[in-house]
Length: 179
Image (cartoon, rainbow, N blue to C red; front, top):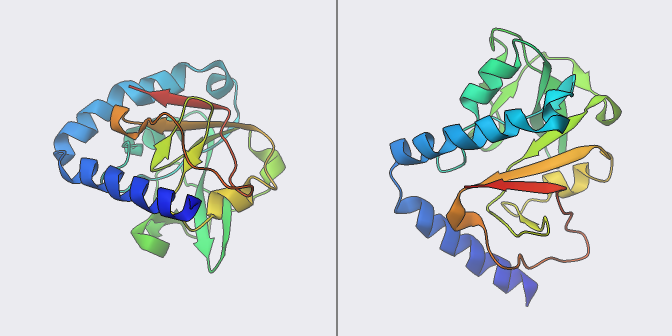
């Protein structure tokens, strides 16, 4: 039952994204990224785990560009069924397209989960209690078994739902930043 609910919710969110203009989503992303930067847990963090957004996601590109100027930034790298985080070069020169078309750091130092102070987490949908619906591969849920620091989801208003259908292996984020 939960798998069906998740599939239907993903389909609904994908429809909302398809109806949105990319430039409009990028414009709507800027205030969300400013709110992330204003979080005490982000401001005090030395090492931040961010993600390089794909089309239709809250755009994180400018946040990454600003963060590398003052923080150690790590981005996810997917190899098979495993995700780890690797360091981004200050000039972003070590980013290249990896799994699922996502920009990943190549030849960046792998970061131990204990070194990460703050993690920004992508998702298809979130709820107010931190429930998160990802893309269905479970990479972040598995990584949360290793990472015990602060997690924050970020989303557009159409991605905030009353309740995300969660299974026992699904992990919540500590906070959600929404429009």
